[in-house]
Length: 329
Figure 1 (cartoon, rainbow, N blue to C red):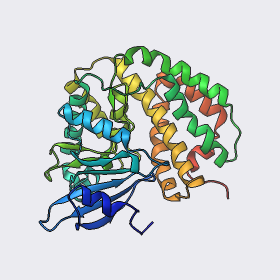
Figure 2: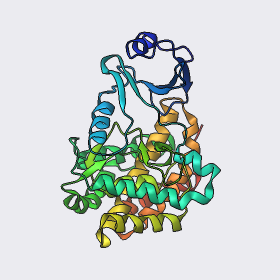
Figure 3: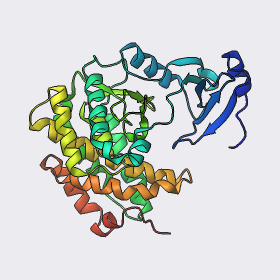
């Protein structure tokens, strides 16, 4: 993986960046690779390689063009060759919200307020031309827990009853979801860039290629029940209220839907992190599971989650829910 991908030099030369210094950057939980290009004038750009057949940059390009055309701050696309997996974009710099807050913890509330306000602005737009976040998608994602986490723990569970419980829990929410908003699906502190080095800076958006049209609470859950960063419960509550004020949302239904989507997303993430270990050989994500389980337990305590909570109590022993990411050898 240390060698530069085949075709890189030809692509950047055609894009006008021939001879630029190529700096490999840390990747994510996918097959994508990232590079920073720096030319002789100290200008920089970001290069993404999303190689087929494992990756397809076309969805990223589709969402980026839509976001930028509607006043949101996705990186500008400088050059693209989707068939070969190449995308050259504007460089948003190094100030991820997560990294900024690690160094500047006193700026936490200001940064989260800005991130919440960016979501509210996105949700004031008409929904984008993306697929629907429908029951089939919610169910497929929630099932990752029974498909990966439960076998890894060596337990057999009632998957049919699990799906039925989610059907009961999510059906009331789907009626309130229409017409929907653009859901970025991975909106959290590691995917938000602070574009001028301030906690209240404009929100640079990345990692949005899986966007769907769904419920406004989903990305709020992603931000405030972050799998990768602790968000204290008082801050979560304050930012939930801040979103409601910014978006003009009122009523207990929204809070209930927030809990529904929190539980659904966190169940999915437990499954995904297990799969990254078992299938993809990336055990580092197991260390994040305790945080996700803790948020999941809080969501399950909401009355709207009662059918799913009963399933967890009947199928996943309490000691395994406490041990979290520790799997049998």
